[in-house]
Length: 306
Ligand code: TXA
Ligand code: MG
Image 1 (cartoon, rainbow, N blue to C red):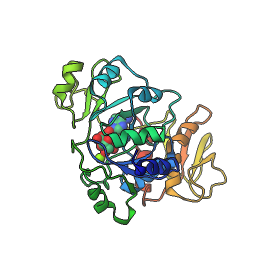
Image 2: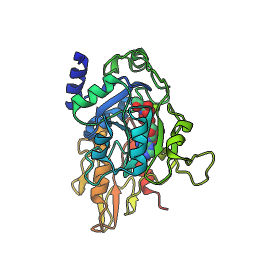
Image 3: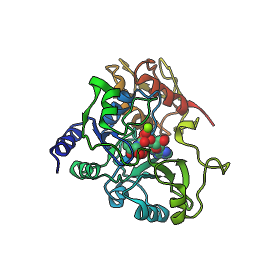
Image 4: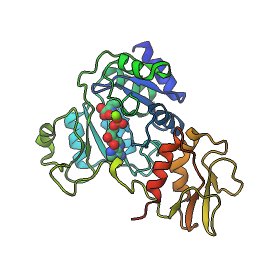
């Protein structure tokens, strides 16, 4: 095994980010179970929103540790993994993958990349690696290590250089929780190849009720309780979710006003407070800077009532 792979696995387990090659594009990886490491991904990419991330696994068996398999998923994984296709499935009840990686959804995207370095890295790490494409928000996906270095400059994490990516296009993303596969993103594996195995798919340009990709959903992740933003204090019955000094907060996203810590805690704390014990969740103001944009974006979606 290349020594960089062992070093990268060590860094991942220590909560650091690592850039690694896949057959599609380079990925910006974090240990999938580490909320803080996942928050660092969003921080480094500078995304204004939390888009859910793909968990990279070394096999269907590893995927089955985290998600509820379906017959359709099983069949497609057998046909196309390792390869440039990602499957979105329900998270298992005991799924250990960071909720921030799922951006608060009850689904998780899983993919087994067809690249020996990536597969060795996942095995050596012993856990899934979540990774978006390794580019700052708004730039195109990188297909060489040099692209990554050019964009992130001195902020570039440890990179394993595996040469140019063979496919050069992100993976195709399919929702496979039901009996028909629904296309969420076109990518490196053609729909014709997929349909040869799965039968007809549901496609956004053809079907009115095709599922939307999560970024387009207004009520992306809504808790059961009403959620109120920019609250300075809780009303009767509400739970106060604090940020900064807050003696009356039930939970605090970050008492030291650290936005990365707040992002890491966001989804799990909202879930903890989302119980009939309270009548609502009041969230203290989060500043609009750095990760604050993405946090406020999600809070806004969570406060939108259907
Ligand atoms: O080829 C690829 O897929 C590359 C390499 C690194 O694996 N990764 C990649 O990740 O392109 P990213 O984060 O740039 O794109 C992930 C896509 C997004 O369109 C996201 O909305 C979708 O997958 N996605 C992830 N989790 C999802 C979920 N739970 N439900 C629906 N869509 C999901
Ligand atoms: Mg991307």
